[in-house]
Amino acid sequence: MPEGDTIFRAARTLNRALAGHKVEKFQSVFPKLTRVDVDQPLAGRTIELVEAQGKWLLMHLSGGLILLTHMLMSGSWHIYRIGEDWQMPQSAMRVMLATDNFVAVAFNIQIAEFHTADSLRRRAGFSALGPSLLASGFDETQAVARLTANPALEIGDALLKQSIVAGIGNVYKSEICFACGVNPFRKVSSLTQEEVQSLMAIARKFLRANVADSSGSQIVTYSGMRRTTSRANPEERLWVYKRAGEPCRRCGNPIASRKQGMDARVTFWCPQCQPVG
Ligand SMILES: [Zn+2]
Image: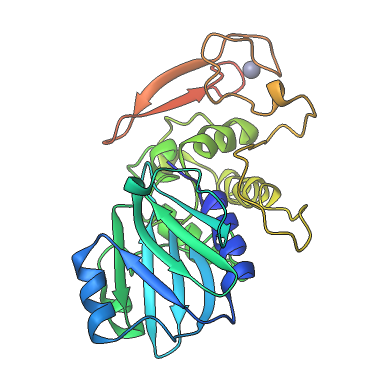
């Protein structure tokens, strides 16, 4: 599943390419969207802002219309110059907006909806989003309050809940717990205030480091390279994720893995560096 940093990058790239430009062409395979296009045409509207909120991507259009999309497991937004070949088949296209210079294409996304600010506020799932780790005004007090309101959850599971804090996916869940020396199977109620604060601080640090802007004003698509170790070798870019059985980069003991939570997402950890008690 794309993590918050992936969505954030996608939103930033789209915003750079599209903001301030008029929609010249709109297409979608979703009848609900095309119906809105027939009633309140997209063409001629200005794309005012593209932003990420947690794992949601919002495209604000003039006239008070908001296109809300979620990439879930397999979706992605691509940006192309007019005439450039798409990296995905036409059949995977779900939504497409073209301006004078660029074509933005959402491939394989399953959730795409038009909203007004009002209907968005009432939308289930979206309105329940916790503070976004990548937001410049991240509300840590609120995030901590939402976390500690779920004392019976295991922390590895709690970090994935977008209603607690928005932006963490399965890769970072394990990496954050390792960096903090916290066993991912500990209950939230067992965490000290210091541990909670360190989890939030590291979560922000990792997500922000991965959206650090190295591309200047150039418009490039996301390359998929995520790192938490700050080691240059791409083979060593993560601490524990997908490293079951391999030696811990800190203590040399084998990394463990196990399914966790209602959704049975795999968690990786070092039993030595992240003891239970
Ligand atoms: Zn270790």
